[in-house]
Amino acid sequence: MEDKMMIIDPHVHMTSRTTDDYEAMAAAGVVAIIEPSFWLGQPRTQVGSFQDYFSSLVGWERFRASQFGIQHYCTIGLNSKEANNEALAEEVIELLPLYIHKENVVAIGEIGYDDQTPAEDKYFRMQLDMAKELDMVVQVHTPHRDKKAGTLKSMEVCLEHGLDPSKVVIDHNNEETVRDVLDRGFIAAFTIYPKTKMGNERMVEVVKKFGSDNIIVDSSADWGVSDPLSVPKTASLMLKRGISKENVNKTCYQNALDIFGYNGKMKEEHWLNPKGINQAQFFNDNSVLRGQEPRVDADEIK
Image (tube, rainbow, N blue to C red):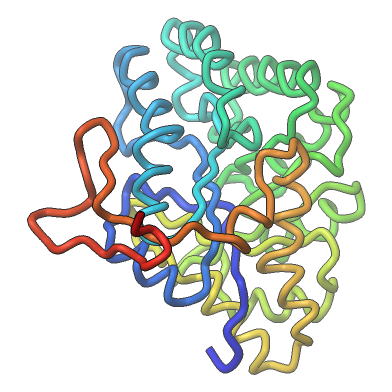
């Protein structure tokens, strides 16, 4: 990048990534990430699988990010695909209150529709009610098929349940949906993928047309063809295409901090005053090292 900036990636599935990605993200200016609850590429068959996964998001993965100087936050929820197994979904809904109050949980998400089935609708609404009762931010996954209809329905249901649209992030937008989302007062997030969904050249044009208010750029990098450096690369391209540094900062940092910092768990001071990296530390008797020499910053030496 020409001018290194602080970056937040508010939607990246680091469980699927390696420590090399953490190193590259930190080097590119990523100071904080948000990892939404997600499906694993194949259906989970028992509630214990969800419990272990949620525990890793609030525990191990948070530790692993810290070992590379990145602050890790997450969102917790029952994803849309697995809402269609209703017997299991009922158990997961009962499990959620054990996790959504954890220290690094900044929203309920990612929830919403996949095939827009009655079961998906049922559990989406249940989790919206939970968010309203607890005054939590919501992160909404919009479907890849029938995108516009699913996006409009997602927003209508949020409004039906009395949610403040300024506390709801509608993700996976494209040129077809962005105006509807912004006009209704929701936060519009965009997933930048190398080959599908939304490219960074297209993202530049969206910001030029719609400005930087209420727009968020994320990578959604997971186990598929994706890039955990999508946000810093898009920030760099925006600058090259003449978008002001102020507006790049809003779309790739500040807007995410404003919305996901709503409940006070995500604070800029967490990365502005870092303790330094100490890879000699352990989490439940495990470290990120595999026989390597640990990096220990001078200010961590006691």
